[in-house]
Length: 224
Image 1 (tube, rainbow, N blue to C red):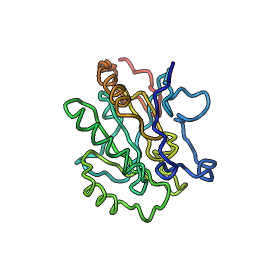
Image 2: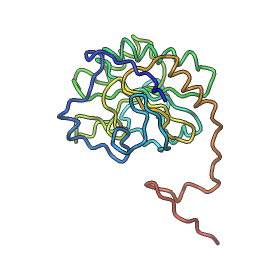
Image 3: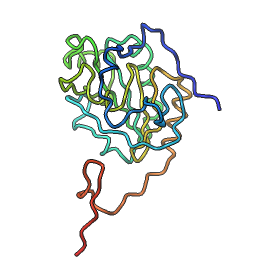
């Protein structure tokens, strides 16, 4: 089976995590680039379902309320990671995101941007990001990936195992990972994949309350 093509941006247009950061970064419990993990990184298929981790965001733009992936479980989500000083993000990834928004504006697809700063931190502050979003006409929700002081790599970037910018993650209804890519794929491939995610029925909800669920575990309900 042929793999979906991923556009290989020039090295000056893709910002890859420096090896010194990759060696010491804590990938957390969700590691899509690790061996023996079923993923779609670089266009590979995803044979096994993985529930994506939650976003860790310190500040939101273009949304009145903070967004959570748990709160969007019934909707497909196109999560794109970028840096405002990443040439490939500005020239290729963000224009594609705007085309996706326009094409799927009549659907329940949720597009979310994640500003994952792992370099030049002082130059890419939230103040600079606000001006950048205004100048480039980015109107979909954008979150600032949270820095926790333990690494140059922000929290969500570590949780998702993102290798650099631009990156994208397509999340299906129910919160499952459908596709994970580093770089920019062809519009037709991305559009077809999103259309398939939209065609998937909304999963049935368990009637059991989630009050007894925490840290990925659910207690047996108490009967009276």
